[in-house]
Each structure stands twice: as C-alpha cells, then as structure tokens.
Amino acid sequence: MRRALLAITGLAASTTVLVVLKGAPGAGQAAQDRPVAEAPVAPGGSAAPEPTPGGVTPSARPSASAKPTAKAGASRTPGIRSSATTRTTPAAPRTTTSAPKVTTRTVTGPVVSYRYGSLQVRITLSGSRIVDATGLGLPLDGQSGLRSDDVQARYSGSSGEVVAKQSANLNTVSGATYTSTAYKQSLQAALDKA
Image (cartoon, rainbow, N blue to C red; front, side, top):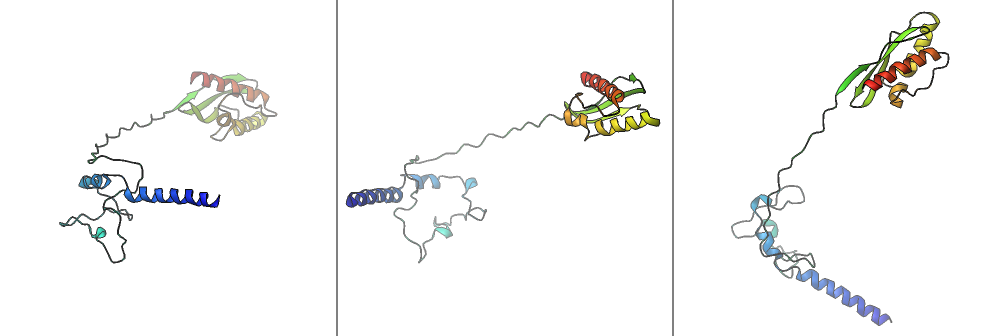
C-alpha cells in the first residue's frame, strides 16, 4: 500500500516538473513581439531596461550564481498555448458619464391658522430628500411662544424630526397639540407641492 502511494506521488511530482520545465511552446516568441510601449514593468514600478544591441538586457545576462533554465524564453504557465505572434489591440477610450447634479430647492407650505395664531412651514430639498425644515410666523410671546419654541426645537432644523422621518408623520409635542397639528398640516401641503 505504501509503495503504491509513493509511486503515485512520485508520478504526479515528476509530471508537474516536466510540465513546468517544458512550458508552453512559443511563449518566448510572444514576449519578443511585444511593442516597446508595453515594456514589462520591473517590481519597483519602473519600466524594465531596454535590450542592448546584443539582444540581452542587463538583468538577463547570466551571472555566476544564476541557475540555467531548461529552455530560454520558456513560459512557466502549464497548459496554456499561445500563438507565435501575439498582437494587442489598443483599448477603446473610456467614456464616463457624470452623475446628474442634485438641485437644492425650497418649498413653502400654506399659512395655517390655529387657536394661538398662524404659521407656515418651509422645507429645503436636495433632490427628493428633505435636508432642512423651519416654521415661519410662529407666535413669540407668552405661553404660546413657549409652545412654538418646543415645536420648532423638535421638528425644525437639519437634525429635526422632519429630516429624520422624511415625512409629515411626526410625533405630537406634549403641551403643544394645536401648534404641532398646524405645523404638520403646512408641512404636508409643502410635501405635496414638492
């Protein structure tokens, strides 16, 4: 059993060595037909040195420590055959399309009258997304002014509930039901216009 396993392993290893050493026929010719503009790039990122008049690049000259290869110009890619001449076609020019520019616009809802006065909502949209909202004409004095401040703080601004929810489906501000309702009505009308 061991001998059979060793024989199979040895056969597989020797077959692999033969395929690697032999390489694909004509692979060396394809490298020689490459245009100068497509010179191979050295690992440092610069182009490989140009061949000298003798046809040998300085890096390809044999040195005392270099191991000889089985066949000059042989490829080490098993199973791939290439033709004697490889022609490359120039790549088609890339065409890019820029993304459509997003327009920012402002839409103002109607004036809504309610128990403590009247107000209207103005929203700013970038494309179809709400990026800002503000209440206009809210009462400033007394108890209704405090309620207006609470509504404005909760709903308006770029970090308010209108921007977060992207709709008029807002939570009612506690203690400011009338102001909240009027704000939502004007906001919904502005969204319908947008």
